[in-house]
Image (cartoon, rainbow, N blue to C red; front, side, top):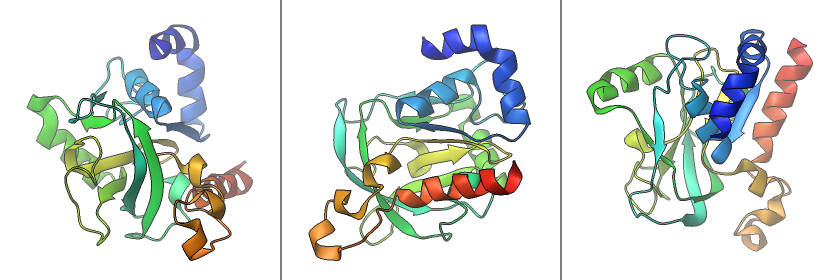
Length: 200
Protein backbone atom coordinates (compact mmCIF):
# COMPACT_ATOMS: atom_id res chain seq x y z
CA UNK A 1 0.00 0.00 0.00
CA UNK A 2 2.82 2.39 0.92
CA UNK A 3 4.62 1.60 -2.34
CA UNK A 4 1.43 2.26 -4.34
CA UNK A 5 0.96 5.62 -2.62
CA UNK A 6 4.57 6.60 -3.26
CA UNK A 7 4.35 5.57 -6.90
CA UNK A 8 1.13 7.53 -7.47
CA UNK A 9 2.49 10.74 -5.94
CA UNK A 10 6.30 10.61 -6.25
CA UNK A 11 7.02 8.44 -9.28
CA UNK A 12 8.72 11.16 -11.34
CA UNK A 13 10.82 12.39 -8.41
CA UNK A 14 11.90 8.87 -7.40
CA UNK A 15 12.98 8.03 -10.95
CA UNK A 16 14.92 11.28 -11.24
CA UNK A 17 16.55 10.73 -7.83
CA UNK A 18 17.68 7.22 -8.78
CA UNK A 19 18.81 8.22 -12.28
CA UNK A 20 21.01 10.96 -10.80
CA UNK A 21 22.88 8.33 -8.80
CA UNK A 22 21.67 9.30 -5.35
CA UNK A 23 21.67 6.40 -2.86
CA UNK A 24 18.36 4.75 -1.99
CA UNK A 25 18.40 2.12 0.74
CA UNK A 26 15.63 -0.06 2.10
CA UNK A 27 16.00 -2.37 5.09
CA UNK A 28 13.42 -5.08 5.90
CA UNK A 29 10.04 -3.43 5.16
CA UNK A 30 11.97 -0.85 3.15
CA UNK A 31 13.29 -3.65 0.94
CA UNK A 32 9.70 -4.81 0.41
CA UNK A 33 8.69 -1.27 -0.60
CA UNK A 34 11.58 -0.95 -3.10
CA UNK A 35 10.59 -4.26 -4.72
CA UNK A 36 6.91 -3.28 -4.88
CA UNK A 37 7.86 0.11 -6.36
CA UNK A 38 9.85 -1.60 -9.11
CA UNK A 39 13.11 0.10 -8.04
CA UNK A 40 14.52 -3.38 -7.40
CA UNK A 41 15.65 -5.45 -9.20
CA UNK A 42 14.95 -2.94 -12.02
CA UNK A 43 16.12 -5.11 -14.91
CA UNK A 44 14.35 -3.12 -17.66
CA UNK A 45 14.20 0.43 -16.32
CA UNK A 46 14.96 2.48 -13.22
CA UNK A 47 11.41 1.90 -11.97
CA UNK A 48 9.25 -0.71 -13.61
CA UNK A 49 5.48 -0.47 -13.94
CA UNK A 50 5.08 -3.79 -12.14
CA UNK A 51 7.15 -5.66 -9.53
CA UNK A 52 9.59 -8.18 -11.01
CA UNK A 53 10.14 -9.97 -7.69
CA UNK A 54 8.40 -10.49 -4.36
CA UNK A 55 9.22 -10.90 -0.69
CA UNK A 56 6.83 -13.62 0.41
CA UNK A 57 5.87 -15.26 3.71
CA UNK A 58 8.71 -17.18 5.35
CA UNK A 59 8.73 -20.93 4.77
CA UNK A 60 8.19 -21.37 8.52
CA UNK A 61 4.96 -19.31 8.26
CA UNK A 62 6.05 -17.32 11.29
CA UNK A 63 8.06 -14.31 12.39
CA UNK A 64 11.79 -15.14 12.53
CA UNK A 65 13.99 -13.00 14.78
CA UNK A 66 17.64 -13.89 15.40
CA UNK A 67 21.22 -13.21 14.26
CA UNK A 68 21.89 -14.28 10.67
CA UNK A 69 25.20 -14.82 8.90
CA UNK A 70 25.62 -13.21 5.49
CA UNK A 71 28.30 -13.69 2.86
CA UNK A 72 29.12 -10.60 0.84
CA UNK A 73 28.93 -11.62 -2.82
CA UNK A 74 29.03 -8.28 -4.59
CA UNK A 75 32.12 -7.67 -6.71
CA UNK A 76 32.04 -3.88 -6.45
CA UNK A 77 28.78 -2.73 -8.04
CA UNK A 78 26.89 -1.90 -4.83
CA UNK A 79 27.78 1.48 -3.33
CA UNK A 80 26.48 0.40 0.09
CA UNK A 81 29.06 -2.37 0.51
CA UNK A 82 32.20 -0.99 -1.17
CA UNK A 83 34.14 -1.27 2.08
CA UNK A 84 33.27 -4.95 2.66
CA UNK A 85 35.65 -7.46 1.04
CA UNK A 86 34.07 -9.92 -1.38
CA UNK A 87 33.24 -13.27 0.30
CA UNK A 88 33.52 -11.81 3.83
CA UNK A 89 30.93 -13.18 6.27
CA UNK A 90 29.16 -10.68 8.53
CA UNK A 91 26.51 -11.04 11.22
CA UNK A 92 23.30 -9.03 11.11
CA UNK A 93 19.97 -9.69 12.83
CA UNK A 94 16.90 -10.72 10.90
CA UNK A 95 13.42 -9.87 12.15
CA UNK A 96 10.66 -10.49 9.64
CA UNK A 97 7.72 -12.68 8.71
CA UNK A 98 7.79 -11.95 4.97
CA UNK A 99 11.36 -12.07 3.71
CA UNK A 100 11.42 -14.91 1.19
CA UNK A 101 12.87 -13.43 -2.00
CA UNK A 102 11.18 -14.90 -5.08
CA UNK A 103 10.83 -14.43 -8.82
CA UNK A 104 7.81 -15.50 -10.89
CA UNK A 105 8.13 -19.24 -11.58
CA UNK A 106 8.16 -18.79 -15.35
CA UNK A 107 10.98 -16.21 -15.08
CA UNK A 108 12.88 -17.62 -12.09
CA UNK A 109 15.97 -18.97 -13.86
CA UNK A 110 16.17 -16.08 -16.33
CA UNK A 111 15.85 -13.38 -13.67
CA UNK A 112 18.25 -15.09 -11.28
CA UNK A 113 20.87 -15.24 -14.03
CA UNK A 114 20.30 -11.52 -14.67
CA UNK A 115 20.98 -10.79 -11.00
CA UNK A 116 24.20 -12.79 -11.03
CA UNK A 117 25.45 -11.47 -14.38
CA UNK A 118 24.68 -7.84 -13.43
CA UNK A 119 26.47 -8.14 -10.04
CA UNK A 120 23.21 -7.38 -8.25
CA UNK A 121 23.42 -10.08 -5.57
CA UNK A 122 24.87 -8.40 -2.48
CA UNK A 123 24.46 -10.77 0.50
CA UNK A 124 23.48 -14.44 0.78
CA UNK A 125 22.56 -16.39 3.92
CA UNK A 126 25.22 -18.87 5.09
CA UNK A 127 25.94 -21.18 8.04
CA UNK A 128 28.83 -20.69 10.54
CA UNK A 129 31.22 -22.41 8.11
CA UNK A 130 30.33 -19.95 5.36
CA UNK A 131 28.37 -22.54 3.36
CA UNK A 132 24.97 -21.87 1.79
CA UNK A 133 22.44 -23.68 3.93
CA UNK A 134 18.71 -24.10 4.43
CA UNK A 135 16.63 -23.24 7.48
CA UNK A 136 17.46 -22.09 10.12
CA UNK A 137 20.50 -20.36 8.56
CA UNK A 138 18.32 -19.13 5.73
CA UNK A 139 15.48 -17.82 7.92
CA UNK A 140 12.88 -17.48 5.18
CA UNK A 141 13.62 -19.88 2.30
CA UNK A 142 14.79 -17.18 -0.13
CA UNK A 143 15.71 -18.22 -3.65
CA UNK A 144 19.50 -18.65 -3.96
CA UNK A 145 19.77 -17.75 -0.25
CA UNK A 146 19.37 -14.09 -1.22
CA UNK A 147 19.36 -11.66 1.70
CA UNK A 148 20.15 -8.49 -0.24
CA UNK A 149 20.28 -7.13 -3.79
CA UNK A 150 21.05 -3.85 -5.53
CA UNK A 151 20.03 -2.17 -8.77
CA UNK A 152 22.11 -2.64 -11.95
CA UNK A 153 23.69 0.77 -11.25
CA UNK A 154 24.40 -0.15 -7.62
CA UNK A 155 22.84 2.93 -5.98
CA UNK A 156 19.51 1.32 -5.00
CA UNK A 157 19.99 -1.26 -2.26
CA UNK A 158 17.63 -3.50 -0.32
CA UNK A 159 18.22 -6.10 2.37
CA UNK A 160 16.08 -8.04 4.82
CA UNK A 161 18.51 -8.24 7.79
CA UNK A 162 19.14 -5.13 9.89
CA UNK A 163 22.61 -3.52 9.72
CA UNK A 164 21.45 -0.66 11.95
CA UNK A 165 20.97 -3.14 14.81
CA UNK A 166 24.67 -4.03 14.84
CA UNK A 167 26.12 -0.57 14.31
CA UNK A 168 28.12 -0.74 17.56
CA UNK A 169 30.20 -3.63 18.82
CA UNK A 170 28.21 -3.92 22.06
CA UNK A 171 25.04 -4.68 20.05
CA UNK A 172 26.64 -7.83 18.61
CA UNK A 173 25.15 -10.93 20.31
CA UNK A 174 28.65 -12.15 21.29
CA UNK A 175 30.02 -8.73 22.20
CA UNK A 176 31.51 -9.88 25.53
CA UNK A 177 33.56 -12.53 23.72
CA UNK A 178 34.88 -10.47 20.81
CA UNK A 179 35.16 -6.95 22.28
CA UNK A 180 34.71 -5.30 18.89
CA UNK A 181 34.39 -1.52 18.90
CA UNK A 182 32.22 -1.50 15.77
CA UNK A 183 29.45 -3.85 14.78
CA UNK A 184 29.27 -5.48 11.35
CA UNK A 185 26.53 -3.10 10.23
CA UNK A 186 28.52 0.12 10.60
CA UNK A 187 30.48 -0.45 7.39
CA UNK A 188 27.24 -0.29 5.35
CA UNK A 189 26.73 3.30 6.49
CA UNK A 190 30.41 4.16 6.11
CA UNK A 191 30.34 2.90 2.52
CA UNK A 192 27.36 5.01 1.48
CA UNK A 193 28.67 8.11 3.26
CA UNK A 194 31.99 7.72 1.47
CA UNK A 195 30.13 7.46 -1.85
CA UNK A 196 28.15 10.64 -1.10
CA UNK A 197 31.31 12.57 -0.17
CA UNK A 198 33.10 11.50 -3.34
CA UNK A 199 30.17 11.90 -5.74
CA UNK A 200 28.18 14.92 -4.67
